[in-house]
Image (cartoon, rainbow, N blue to C red; front, side, top):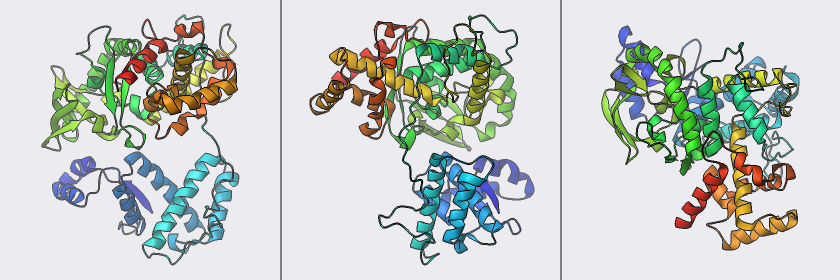
Length: 487
């Protein structure tokens, strides 16, 4: 079985020269409302669609699943189908013993067994697939017997809470300066550092730390959203995110001047070289790109040509794939509108950022025993840990501003409950929840456990938490308190 993904730009590029009406194929995809990124399973001999898998994924598309999620789901399903084929069965012939054998393979037998979180996601997806097969008449009943409470018998028995991992100020600086920027622990330049664009990595870390954005949000940010070429020195920026946010939940992002200064340094020093090196390559791909010729900063929209048609998009409604092909023309040629670009002028994707942080962790481990190096955790830092750090530091500071120091943990929890009843606008937990874009404040409650940890208590040294010579979390908190009072 062959797995592919719908990509109209590839249709135009590769079918035109083979006697196929590529425009007609693209029109058919649009008529059927099949967006880019939709998984397609093909028979390896006939190259015909494999049913009912293709229909199920089209069903998921109509449920508004994003391309990233569909991509992950497709590989989970393909892996399971290949396992069934190794046992001489097809998708519709699977038995309960096949499912249990597959669980043993994934969680115990294979070279690198998966953890509960990964297996739980796979078990839930497979259960969802077979429920759909029954509902649409492909099977009479599901091969798995449900428990008396309706639970999936393959799901992990243990329930894990949020894996909240946060950094101290020393740990963050070590991660940013030594790991990402390649400096030595004594702040001297390393003569053996061979990393590419260290200012880009530093700017990304500072932007993530000062905004609490998820990796998919800060890594896909566009130049106009940060007010580039329009923002006056010393000004902060606020812009909305939605299409790149988890579950498409709309929220406003506040970016303080310290983070913007870090980004400006990258834009002035490193980015021009990256853009110049990719200008010709992007020009050759112009037909595949969204070429912007008008930016409306007040309305937050971009207008240009995509697929030979004039289009206008609200930046908050642009998903990662559209942002990746968004460019503008200038006197030197074609320039990407993405802030964080790499080789070929492309916006850096998740795999590139993963490699960057893995390389950073390796450098941090090399210097872990050097004088002044902070204690490192057993597991390497994740980009998402900057979001946890933002949430915890901001929550702790807001608590202090509202009530002052309260050493008794029980009294602090009782105080949180009183906030929920009478101070919705100014409740620290709800302010942080809104800033993080959590679907429910209950998700943010997990941070309360850490805010009572003396190691993370915010005291006079809190003012040191700043990315550069710019805003601290205290400044960010004051902005949010004022804004909350105006709602």
